[in-house]
Length: 151
Image 1 (cartoon, rainbow, N blue to C red):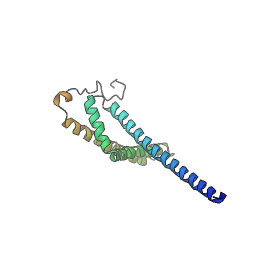
Image 2 (cartoon, helix red, strand yellow):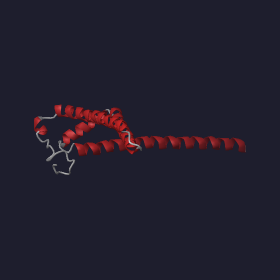
Image 3 (cartoon, helix red, strand yellow):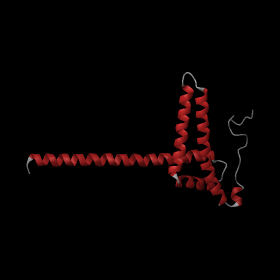
Image 4 (cartoon, rainbow, N blue to C red):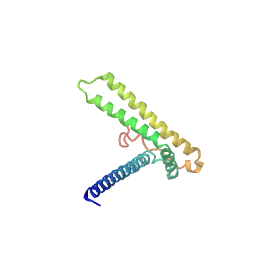
């Protein structure tokens, strides 16, 4: 074999290895992003659902993660609406009408996400025995907005 075919073979091999490395890095990143999303959902669900028994929390999380695409769309839509709202808040001069419209969109998106979460909770509770539902502990005071102090 002469030097030219060896160089060509080495070049083809280098390109193939580089492409393989890039594909592996991409797939690894996609896998990690999925795990990160699930961890964020678990963390958020755990903090929101402290009032419910562990069995109910696990079942709600399982139901939410069954429709990852719908959950991602709801969370992403809310995130984007909030970013638009904050951009309007920072604009100079402040456009009150645009701000109220952006806030309405955030409320709508928040409601859609809450409906998704509550739907999963209702489905879980429908299959939960009464003695386990009796373990549900509502928050002690208010909504927690004032750190346990009522106005």
